[in-house]
Image 1: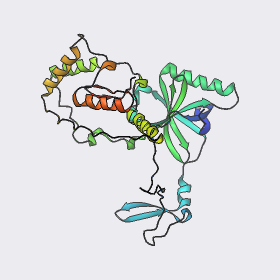
Image 2: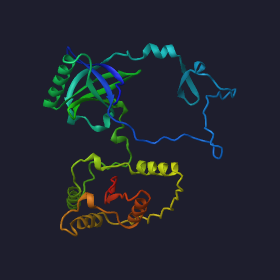
Image 3: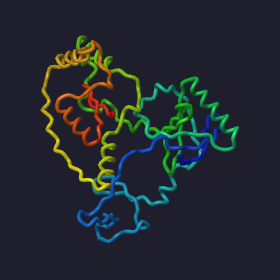
Image 4: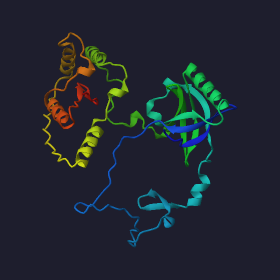
Length: 309
């Protein structure tokens, strides 16, 4: 069972809903320790003064901000404490906005919110807020302080519960206009090209089923670690070089893609039955042998992270 990482309340208008905060995700990343080759000794890192070469204890370390090349402004701990956001225990909702108005680029980390406090009152207020937002398709936007940092937050219905997502502020988002190479509005595709591209999109359209996507690298890494832990000798096969990409006409590529979708059964093949071709197929076969039969399905748009027995 997950443990609550924060306890407080949601505040909107004059209503307070006591809640507990739980992480909604758990990372599957594999973290390695570092060792000296040959001896197996752990690698340690020390805080060393570049002037004396001596290790510096935490209590003698201060923070500095580089205002120009080589010039730093030192900031004392009490100065940081003086401007730290007040560690309130509330998620203060200032506005309710339409869910579809928020672009996913603004979301950071997501947490579940559960009722907290005496049974009955907290649960009733929680359910009231949940159903009111579900009925109107709205998201509560406000601020919350977690640990010592203030976040913009979105409180929204999610799978029959309330969830809170920390968000990025507007000045943290890079404007598309700042990205070199993005086509301008005047670069309109030819109608025939657009029609063919739309056919490909239609053929590859499927329902969103997150369970079918797998982190195949992490799965193979776990298999490798498990095999080595059992004393097995692991042989790494040399990867075949990918053939250089052939530059072809865009219209030719679109037409070939549509014809490939129509071939065989006269309709677009299921995404689940798509198979890799050429060099990618060979690599998939090798990966299957190393991972006990798992294969990667690919489409013309790239590799699908999905494993099948």
